[in-house]
Image (cartoon, rainbow, N blue to C red; front, side):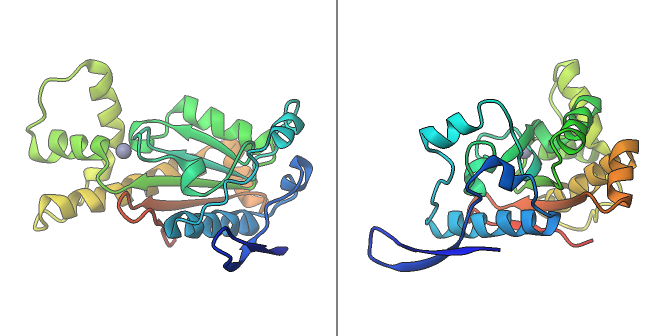
Length: 227
Ligand SMILES: [Zn+2]
């Protein structure tokens, strides 16, 4: 991994993980390097020191006919959960799928398979977040049984989150139960993706890693989940 030293506007010296100069360079990243790049970018974001890489007109133009994102991120549609900003990345760096509750259905799986099989993406990160409205609504529906009337399509979405409600510690306050469900919902998404034939083969071949994380809306920090 290369490092560059930059002098910030305040005159402070900072050593930052360098981003690839070309799209082709990004294509050869390992899953571990991809994860490190996300972690380093998130640290910059948390510190308020984002460098907003790969935002120039020249770089944008260089990607007009190809893309080699180094990571795929499945995240919630929540307006505060913005993967490219959270990981301080730029144009062409992340293949992002966003859907309320970061649930996995066939379309989501197909999008991720495309990123892995056709774009050579070595890392998939499933990222839930604190105070997720979709998971909270699923808790209201399937645990507290006090969900207000909702359209069938919303109920169908919540049903995908329902398995995350199984086995929750009912002695915890509601907030603690929702936090537990948010993490379980991420793990269930990983299980569903890992069971997909193509992705399973890539995992077995060592070409792919699928990791989980939870994003903290307040601090901006992304906490990786252990196995
Ligand atoms: Zn959410």
